[in-house]
Image (cartoon, rainbow, N blue to C red; front, side):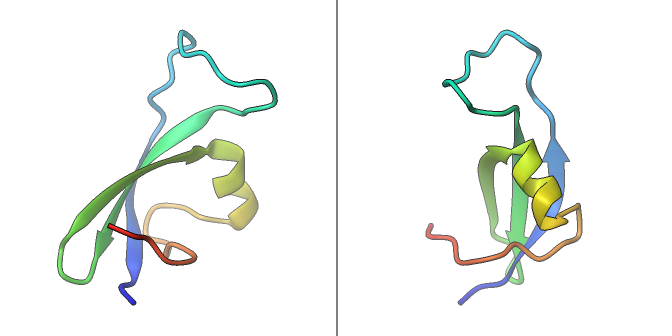
Amino acid sequence: MAKWTIRQIFDGEYGCEERLSGEGPKVSVTLVDEDGLEKYVSVEDNWLTEQGLTEGSLWPGELTI
């Protein structure tokens, strides 16, 4: 199982994106594994905060490519 590290967190919302009811603001997260492979995910900003995740943190769980 590859270990993914958060390289960058980007708040790309500018208020014009529509969200589903009950959905919070999302951020784009760039992840990188030990081989330099990058993966991009979009998650709720609040979830990152609740997990205590910041740039440089290991991503919890497994990602499929």
